[in-house]
Length: 454
Image (cartoon, rainbow, N blue to C red; front, side):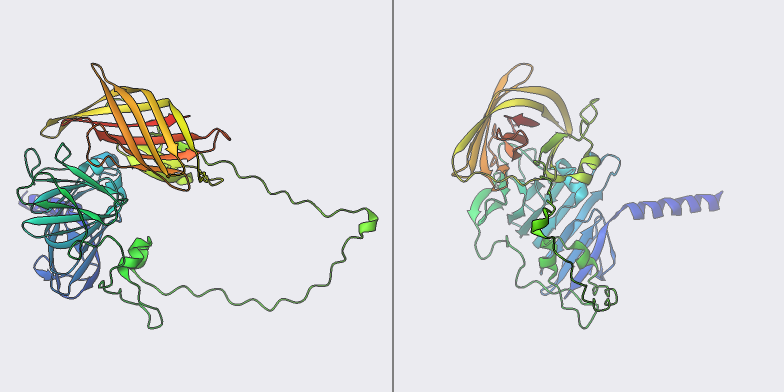
C-alpha cells in the first residue's frame, strides 16, 4: 500500500509538472537565467519560474500556443499562469508579470480566443489585450506601454483593479491604446489610477521592429546567413526562430530541353480562327461573421474552425468573429461618401458583479446608421442599444483602409465602440458593410456584438 501511494503521488506530480509548462526557450544571448540556472535554448519554462537577463542578456520564449515573450537586457519577468483549455478556448487563462526592465509580448492563438482572461502585470499597472503585439518597459514606479499591432487596455492599481486579479481592468479609469496611435504610449505612475497618453521619447519602449540592438540568431550552416530574430518574428517567421535551417536541396537539374519542331500556324484564308481562352471572373469577396462562442445555453452560431479553414480571419472581438472569403479584391473609392442603415445584428450586455462574477444578457440594436467618407478615409456610426429597461446611445468612429477594412478605437470612452469591419461589393454596385464591436457602457457593463449594414 505504501509503494502504491508513492507511485500515485509521483504520477500526480509528473502530471502537474507537465501541466505547468508555459513555453520553451528558443533563443538566449548574453547573461540570462531561468530560475537559479543559466537559461539555455530548448529548456522548458514553467509557470512561476523567474526569468532574468543581465546587461547584455536576451531571452526569447515561445509560449505553448506559439506566442512570443521576449526579455531584453536588465529584465526580470515570469509567466505566472499559462493554462490553455483546448476544449473550451474561452476558459484559457494567461498571466505575465514584468518586475523590471523591458519585455515584449505577442499573443498566441489561445490568447486571441480568450482575451478576457489575459493579464500582464507590472509593479504599478494591469494590461489587457485587444490585439497581439505590444512592448512594456517598467521600474518600480513607472510603466510605459506601446503597441505594434492590435491594441491594449491599461489601468493603474486602484479601486477594484488589484495585482492578484485576472483579465483586464476595464472601467472609467482605464485607457486604451492601439497600433494606429503610432508615436504615442500609455504611461502609469505609482499612485496614479488613470494612465496618461504621452508622446514616445528615446526612453520609451520601441514601437517598431526590428531594433538595431537586437542580437542575431545562430546559424546551423556556415554558408547560411544569420537571421535577426526580432525581424523574423515580425515577418511571421516563428518557425525560423525555433530552428534556422538551410534550405533543402532542390531536385536534380533536368536535361536541357530540345528545340521543338515548329508548329505550322493556321492559314487565315482557310477560315480557321484562333481559339478563344475564357478566364473565369472571380466572385466578389464576402464577409462572414457570427458568434463563435456559447453564451449561457445558446450554442455558437458560427463554426470557427470550418470558416478559418477556407476564409481569411479579419477580427475576433469577444463572442464574435469576422472572416472574409476568397475572391475579387475590394478597392475603396478615392472620393465621395456612402451611408448605410442597420439591417441585422446580434448583441449582448455583460454585467460585472465583482469577484469574477459576470452575467450576459441579450439586447437589441435599433436606429443604426453608418457613414463612410472615402475622401478622408474615415467612418462614423451611431445606434441605440435597447436593454430590458433602458435605451443607451452608442457611437463609434475610425479609419477605412484601401481594401475596405474598418478600424475604430473607443480610446477608453464610455458608450463608444471598438469596431472592426469590412466593406464588400457582394451585392454588386450596392455595397454592404459588416462590423463586430465591443465597448464599455458604464462602470459595470460592457457591450459586445456584430451587425450588417446596407
